[in-house]
Image 1 (tube, helix red, strand yellow):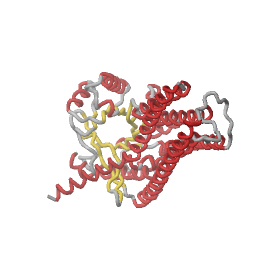
Image 2 (image 1 turned 90 degrees about the horizontal axis):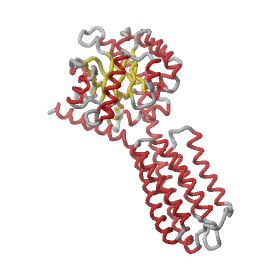
Image 3 (image 1 turned 180 degrees about the horizontal axis):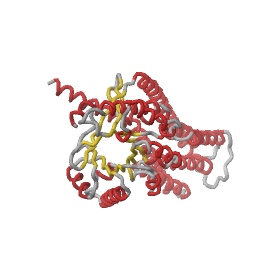
Image 4 (image 1 turned 120 degrees about the horizontal axis):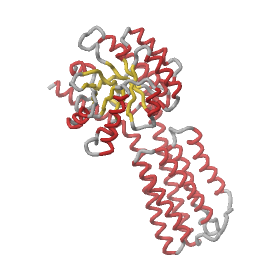
Length: 448
């Protein structure tokens, strides 16, 4: 019973961590989807209303709103966050400014009201672009506020040809004022809540680094004979109140605050210590451990010296240490990357390219970098048996890696049929739930 209880607790903690990891991303995604649906709905509503009245210039603007909303919706589903946000806010600012100047001139009976929407747009931009460069984040908010100020303090308009009659604008002024202020208040509340959550996360994460509240999980990597060749190390945060948290819940924040550097150093220290412990054990001494390296870690001037010092201090075989790079990292500074990689490879350290095919790498990158392993992304593996494009990509990557003398490993293998397909096409390394889920050290040792 105690074993079942422990297993049940572990499952609950893993699910909790996975759920929490998605909260922030899902909330932003829902807000973008909601904004796009509001744009489509309002465009359809007002488009029909003004088409019956014969205001065709307004109908054209409503069509633009509908198309912008549909574009944002599609980009959000495709996870193209920055492009979706840029189109969303550009369309909103242009349409609000044009509507205010052309359709909503101030009169004694009805003051301007359309420009009030620029206030929630300014707050929304702070939220949507919070992880973007400061110029983009504050530039869009500042532009919205300056436009609001200019429209609120001026009666200028280019023409009165398209102005709506006062009887329409009187009701519209009240309606738009209420909606704009409701949006403004709602976004301020979300921004304040989000800021408090991030402040709390920052405080807790700094305490976690200080108190080493992290644990490492090992996901087995097997060859085509079913023998364990090593593992990929996956970090988890054992939060004192929230339990076991997956990387998605804190890694992005660690990247933006720079805490990823001490966290990455801790992971490397633990990895080297474990390799040293296995060095004299015949059962484990041939196993390799793969560690993900962040862009901030690798860009440190002292990175090469730290890795070499780690190897020397622990007295480990450098060939047992594998550093995983992402495609995003290799396009940042290829010259610096190649220089550092070469210096480490000469001492025996191995490098692999993670999630190959999902980013921006090209064949010239593979040619210039001393990589020893390619990892086929799970997004191709999951439908390799049902999607012709995925099948072609997987076959090509395997052939490419083998022709360049690299080991090719498929991650995300979940069925026997997937594994057979990969093996039949020359893939010799596998990682995924079919073979073994991420597990604590003791369970991994037992698995081996």
